[in-house]
Structures are given as structure tokens and as C-alpha cells.
Image (cartoon, rainbow, N blue to C red):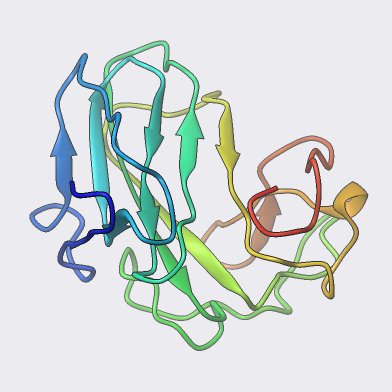
Length: 168
């Protein structure tokens, strides 16, 4: 990667279009709006890793703690509402109002497509850098949610955001 380079992958195909990192590999390049992967990044193995993903204009990195087992995880950031931007994992959009449990609303700013094509990613600690959502919610009310096929479910037991401004 150059210091101000966007690397693009095939956004519609996480299997064949991802920038792939092998087991025990690391990424030490820049992580900025000017330097990231516009599309999918995949990481194999059981190492902690930071995925340098974004939209081509905004970095939205995802960091995982070391998984217990060897897994392959792919992720990409999609700017825009999940109600209008198609999720490549299932080829559909997802209603913002199909919420469950303690979830009150889903941000229309964007979403990560999280794909685990092999192995199990259960109990992997995930940290994300968020866009500015100060107009959407206070940090104390933010949590990661995921689409379970019919609605949005909490992926964390409690809100745990450090802030609601960009890159919190």
C-alpha cells in the first residue's frame, strides 16, 4: 500500500474478491481515509487482526481479538442504510424497524458485512471504528447489532461505545 492509496476489491464477492491475509500474517500499512481497502478483507488463522476496510472515502476498520480456533473471517464496510443498500451475503436489504430485545433503532449510516466462511467465530471480541453518529444516539446507548435473517439482534450484552463521534 502507498501512503495515500485506496485498494479496491470485488464488493459483490467476499470469497473470490477479498484481499486475503494468511495465518500469522499482519498488516502494518496506514489506516486512514486515504489508505484502506474499499471492499472485502479476509483473515485466516487464530490471530488478533485489524481489518483495514472502508468505503473508498472513509476508513471503518474492524479489530478482532485472537479467535480460539483457526477461522477465516471476511468483512467489508458498506456506506448507506441497510434498508436501501444490498447486503452481499444474502442479496437483500434489511428493514431498520425489524428490531428485537433491547434494540430501539438501527443506524442508517452504514454497515459491515461480516462473513465467516469456515470455522466458528463465536465469542470473538470485535471492536469497530464508527462513523459520526452523534445525531443518531449517545455513546452510552450504542451497541453492535447483527441481522439474524428476520431482524436485528444485539451482538453485545451491554452498550460499550467509547463515543459517538467518528472513529470512536
